[in-house]
Image 1 (cartoon, rainbow, N blue to C red):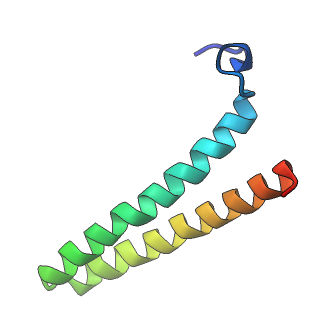
Image 2 (image 1 turned 120 degrees about the vertical axis):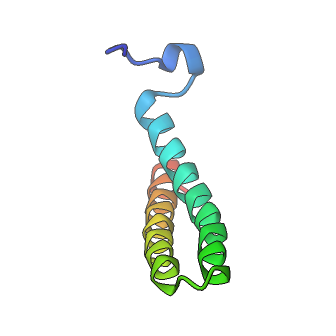
Length: 76
């Protein structure tokens, strides 16, 4: 792993790219977990469904926090 910032290659500073990536990954994960919740419910496994709901909630929180930070940094 390089210790140099790659912003010269991508045009986006690592820290900014990381925030964008984190936000997108958190929201994608929340969507994916919805499928897992439904699969567990179809199988009658309420314990597993609740586990996935809690994980989904945490992913949503991460996505919301990332969106708020992006908004503050972009000034809109």
